[in-house]
Structure formats: C-alpha cells, structure tokens
Image (cartoon, rainbow, N blue to C red; front, side):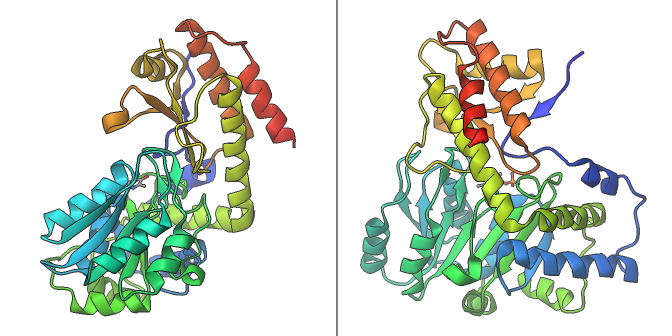
Length: 378
Ligand SMILES: *Cc1c(COP(=O)(O)O)cnc(C)c1O
C-alpha cells in the first residue's frame, strides 16, 4: 500500500469539508441559492485580501487573474516596471510583452529580496511608468518580497502597484488597503485550499481609473463587465459553480481559524522546516528572505535532485516539488501552505531523510525531525 501526501506549492491538499462541498449536486447559477453564496464569498474574500475594494472571481487558474491585471490596467505601448526574481516574476514580463506593453525589468537575483533603492532609482530614471508588477511569494525560489516597502515607494508616484499573491494570500500577510497596494491577484489552489480553477483579483480606486482608460484587447477578462455583474450579485459568464460553493466552505474554515492565526501557523511550519533542513546540513536557497509558504533548499552535492523528488513521490507517495527552469535539479521545494499541519511537515521531513539516506547523503538519521519537533514545541 502507498498513501499519498501532497507537499507542493500548488495544488495543495483539500480539507475533507471542501471535498464534501465539491461532491454536492450542481445547482444553477442564476438562482437565489447561488446568488446567496456568491454574495457571501465576495464579502468574505475581502477580509482575506484585507481590502474594502471588490474582489472579482474569475474562472481561470491564477495566471488568468494576472492576465486580467495586465489587460485591464494598460494599453499598447505603455511602460510597466517588473520586479523579477524568479519564474513567476518573469510571467509578468511575458504577459506585458504579449500585449505590446513595454516591460522595464528589475532583475533580482533568484533567492534574494529587492533592494528598495533600486526600485526608487528606476522610478526616478524612467518616466511614464503606469504600473509596477511584483510578487508576494516567489514560489519558484521560496522568497517573500517586502511588499510593504515596495508599496511605500510606489505610492509616492503616479504608478499603480499590482501584486501576484497567488501562492501568498491566505498564508502570508498582505494588507492591501493599509499598505496601499492597488491590485492583488490570487488563485484557488494554494492558500485557499481548493482545487485549481478560480482566479481572484481586487482593484483599488487609483487603479480603477486605469481600468477605465485601458485600450488593451480583452473580452473574457474585462473587469468592467465583471463589475457590472457583481453589482447585481452576478457573473458575466457561467462561473465555476462547484468551486465557488467549495470556496464558501474554505473561507468559513479560514475565518474560523482567524487570519492572524493562519499567518502564525504558516510562520511556525516554515520555521520548523527551515530548522530541519539546517539540522540535516542542507543549505536554504533563500535564507535572507525565506517565505512562510514554501521552503526552497539546495540539493546537496552528490545527490541527484530530480531523483530525490521522484523517489519520494513514486516509492513513498510524498510529493514535494523540484526546481523550475534554471533551478531544475538544483533545489527542491517543500510547501507548507494551505491545509497543512505540524505532522504533515514532520512526515515530509522524515520521508526526505529516508530518501536522502538511500541516495548516499551522510547525516544523522532523525536530526531533521528532531529539529522540527523542537521548533514546534517552542
Ligand atoms: C502558482 C503560481 C502562479 C501560477 O498560477 P496558475 O494557477 O498555475 O496559473 C503564479 N504566480 C505564483 C507566485 C504562483 O505561485
């Protein structure tokens, strides 16, 4: 027998309550029953986004919400600044290019946070920047960017700040209104404990002015249509009815735990995971800006990184993630976001230890689990 455990930075495991909600018979969306759910989740999402602005629910994976941000804010020929420190930062650049928007890229070394002075310099040097795109949790490197600091700088300029919080929201603090973030996008399959299929986007008043001027071609992701519909507690197209109903369940669970407790839990799991890796003699990939949602670890010399991930998954049913793009085979990533508790992490670490031993890496068996337990006992 092999039991399966998911410790990947999306999709993340589903709580039984969410599975139950997903298994219910479908209802029609133009009904008072569905409208009641839509109304409830639209309000409840605002708490998770820490905003009073509308949060639109799109039927798409998270990238759809990123695309919605680009096509609704900007027009052909506009200039945008992209803070790019990993694969998902690159996605902002690629989206801009796809729509004829000129991305000016601030390259941040993978595994590092942004030097705020660099952002200041770019904003002073380049005129007519309409939007700054950045990432809360750069899932490919396990870095959390200091969005509060970035927002402080962008707030002083005419540009709007749009944040990819797809893997960050519901795991790491992002105070949209308080910090002055203009656009936040997220998705269902990371912190929100749902299957993939929903994208979320919230837009500030400052950014909505750009939405009204934007000339980018768009149809499915037209937020003006989404707003017209939401004002009537409706959606422009058939929503992913089942996922929206399951979202209601997930949000109730999140509210029950409390947003501050959710952040605390993620922080604790991250600290335990990092302590375990260090105790195993492994090197963290982003020690100075480590994310509370996912931990990236360098594959030790002499170990085949791709094989490590494959053996854990295929022989023991524990799925973690390898590295993406240029980090393929060089790092592995253990997620601790969403429906993850202390003993999921302990289990993941113990499996990692077993497979590292089998692959010939030298360390004291149990050292990682011990360090994690000690951290969790604090
Ligand atoms: C997962 C992820 C995405 C991509 O989302 P999809 O749902 O796969 O489209 C984008 N950005 C970040 C930071 C992510 O973690």
